[in-house]
Structure formats: structure tokens, C-alpha cells
Length: 243
Ligand code: ZN
Picture 1 (cartoon, rainbow, N blue to C red):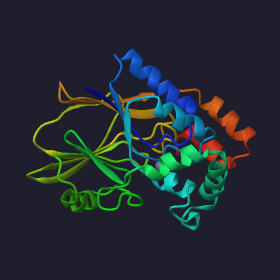
Picture 2: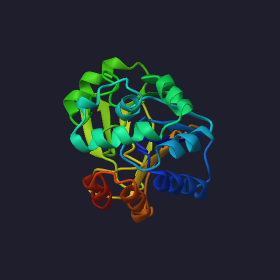
Picture 3: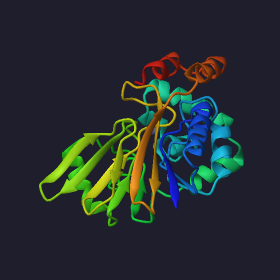
Picture 4: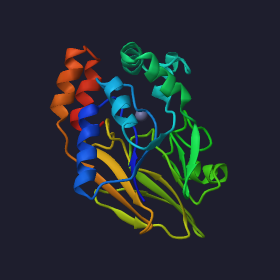
């Protein structure tokens, strides 16, 4: 089976479609593992949910998904994120809202656990440090774990020498072996590692391999739509810089 691992799409339909086209060029996929935050920030939240639902997929809840349906308080968001989230909530159909409310916080698929922030605290924790990754190892029982939320592609590898943190570079490949891993494939719709290209991963379970890719998409097309919807300026600008 080939799994497309897509995190933090954030209502960016142009980026989402470009990633799907890229996957097709690479031989396609059987199923999507979506790491949450399908909506929030971007200009096409409804269309992103609709497109995701056209595929065999599993998806977990992110903080923006929950905020858009009132399950977390947007007072926990900064001003721009809160404004975009209020706008997002207005774009969603009742069916979209039911879908977002139905998403689990954590799920196990094959050898992987999927959680948006972290297995310890799926909605809010950002996994950036080796220490936090180490502490999280006891919160999932599968060998491997996939997270999103920070929008920064990276990998924590647990060997007998402890946990090592590595940035996931474009076209990085890794063979799954006995070391436990926590992998963040980066963000499809709002990368934050100073690289504006969409970021995603592909897992080929027959080969036991994970592949990470960065791809250009039409950033300006998304920005134009955000401008039309009068979404906050900083949220528009950041897409150009990947911040
Ligand atoms: Zn996010």
C-alpha cells in the first residue's frame, strides 16, 4: 500500500491539488493519512474538505479544525489566526462541521500512530525538542508516529543512544527499521521552515520506505483568493516566505 501523508493543508486548495498531482506523477497512492488542520488560514476550507473526502482516507483533528466548530476557544489563537478561523467557520456547511467534529484525536494505522500535535497532547503540543519527543515515546505503542502542527518537516529517531533530531530535507528517503521514529512531513498549505514549497511525505508499506517531497505550487493564486476574501495581510504574505 502507498499512503500519502498530508499535514496542515489549511484551506489551501491550490497547494493540496498540486500535491495530489505530484503524487500521481510519482505512481499514485492508495490512501491518504491526513494529519489534521484541513481548514484554517487558507481561502478554500470547504473545497479542501470536499476534495479530501473524495479519497480513501483517515484524518485526525487539529486545533484549527476544532476551533472552526467551536470545540476549542479561539481566544487561544493569536489575532490573525482567530480572524481567519471565524471567517473559516462561516464558509463551512453543516456537513463539513459534522465531519470535522467526527475526527478522532489519535489513530493507529499499520505501524503508525497519527496525532496532530503530539501523542501526549494531540491538539496543542508542538514537537520541536528532543526532550519533548523523548517524553512522548511512552504515549504511543506503535513503532512509528506521525505528527503535524509545527509545519516544520523533521524526524526524531530513537536509538539506544537516545533521541536524535534531524531536519527532513527535500527528497529525503528513509527505510523503516527497528528504531522508533516520530516524523513530521511538514505542511501542505502553510510551510513555516523558510521554504514556501508545499511539503508532504509518501509511505510505501511494501518497501518499508518513507519519501519526503517539496514542490512548488502557485502561491500567488492562493494569495489572490485570500486577498479577495480580505483575510489578514500577514497570513497572505507569509506564504511567499514560508514563515
Ligand atoms: Zn496547522
